[in-house]
Length: 613
Image (cartoon, rainbow, N blue to C red; front, side):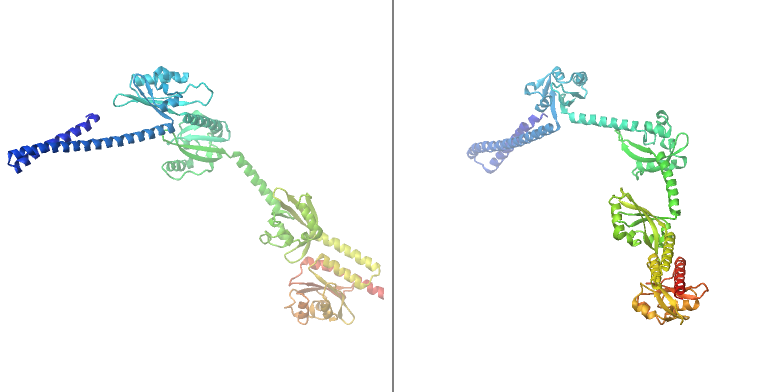
């Protein structure tokens, strides 16, 4: 049934039903309730008038309801039309209908750049609006639509007189169920530009992959068969493109023991498993040789929604070769540094030790792990004082390229060893690189010779014995600052008299003045009586010091060893007393050094005795 007849027929049906019910129903009721025929005739007239009023009211109500429904429908259609027009404008879309020519919507004409005067037009007119290069394709598509009733989808450039960005339009058309030819026109310029940019980008990347010799790129389908193989892959693995296309990944470049594992990992990734991480792997060339590569993997979907695997491999042959050479060089360097007799060190930006070679422990006595992180000045306090501090600042500021000097290194045992220090500044890291050369023996030899020369000069100059002995003690203390030195002389009553003790407290000197040279009487008394070396490494516990512990400890003396010196006949002339501020034992080098100084003291005492006699 036609939609335009539904309303009138519904109204007519309702009227007929109401009329029939009224006529037959009212007649039945009149005859049933009223018996007088004249009365019935009068009521028939009233019934007719009432019928006219009721039927008019019913028709009015039905007409009013239909009119309201039509108005609401019209408003809805108008709203939808506006929304559609706005959507078409936003989407760059217009519509058309073909009835003996094109009938263009306002939006469609706007897309063509035409005014409303061209609302109706022919096929020839449409073709004249398009770029000449596109007209034949559009004409063929229109002929297929108009003659063959085939759906049309064709894109074309708009003919533009002014140089500007090209406008692309998409023309679509089809035949609806009523045989009408309807269609749309849409501005697809942005899409075309995006597609062009994408093609250009893809072409650039393809050229990049093709022309980069060290980046090998391969593509594989779901069956792991090669679908892409660039020139770098040929150079890396040895397979030409025609040799690689269609072959499986594992058959080409994966070593035999790893093939099943690689295939399983790829298959698992394709069904949602974990991706294969980028890593350094060893793959196989055509000739069977192995090559190290850094391989990255990417799983993509193509235009047919099919999974494709792409591998990007970077040849690590040169890097591995350099790494190997670097490891060999580093091994040689480490071996050299570890076996050097000189201590090698590096400090950080805060002047704290960050690297030490084994020679450090041999020279300083400090374990390396205890020394790292400590400032260099902790072991060489002179660097933080006076002139040396200033020169170190000049090195850090770049005024000096390097610094070479001699200073004292405080060892783990508290000894002061003379070292030659070489420092260089790393400007890039702002750290100090340096070395320590132990010159203590040479230093001691030089100063011992200077002491001999000084003693001989003083003897020839007839200086007083006390001055000569005081000079000997001071020179010894300058070589070993941790020592406090005394020289005791044995008199004819077998008692020890202080010959020199410039660094010992007066109260202590008074306490030991005239001590008896006897066994187990302090270190010096026992040494003078026995003629042998005596070592008391802890005065608070040593039995020889029971009568002198309180005065020694009060003077800050906690260890003492004594070495007698004798004349040419082997008779004891006196003793050297070596004191320390903490419990300790002398090293063999210390004993050897003091022995040399005892010879000088013996020479001075004998020469003075000869001069007096």
